Amino acid sequence: KQEVTQIPAALSVPEGENLVLNCSFTDSAIYNLQWFRQDPGKGLTSLLLIQSSQREQTSGRLNASLDKSSGRSTLYIAASQPGDSATYLCAVTKAAGNKLTFGGGTRVLVKP
Amino acid sequence: NAGVMQNPRHLVRRRGQEARLRCSPMKGHSHVYWYRQLPEEGLKFMVYLQKENIIDESGMPKERFSAEFPKEGPSILRIQQVVRGDSAAYFCASSPTLSNTEAFFGQGTRLTVV
Image (cartoon, rainbow over the protein chains, first blue to last red):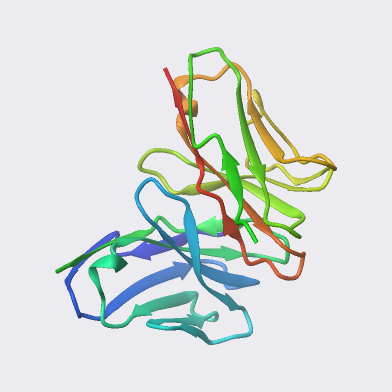
């Protein structure tokens, strides 16, 4: 059974510092991995999708890497801003059309 | 292109009543997934549907819960005889095709059972 873990559970940084969020999964046979952002009381916003054949994806200040063999993904957010404060979730799928298995999330606070 | 639409956003039900949660996927998306987020817990998969078919319901509680995605209209998650433990945020996600599985989520329905 796939298990997804995100460490740390919470992170507080001063504005301008780079953020590094970690995600690990127990079964390396994944189809893709997706990073989401969730604001309090809101839905999930898709940030980046990495196919299993890819090593990384970039969008603006966000960069996500994937090391399938070691079961790890890292989300980097450069030059953090208070607006980046949110919970970040990673999720994996086992096969096309398959359900997402989520980690518990990392709650990020960027202090002005 | 509107996103995934869920309604109602908030729903209050007394114990024993029925709750109906609706989800309209993004235009052109034929795959719908329902997830539940219990207070202080992570998101858990409930059910995966395509038009008129339930593909995977391995995450659905055995009793009181059902889901459908008819040929016309939104997907419905139905909870009969609600109990306090059903209080949670219920999220719907859609994806366009079997091979493109990037999931797009709605804003969720927050169910409170009193």
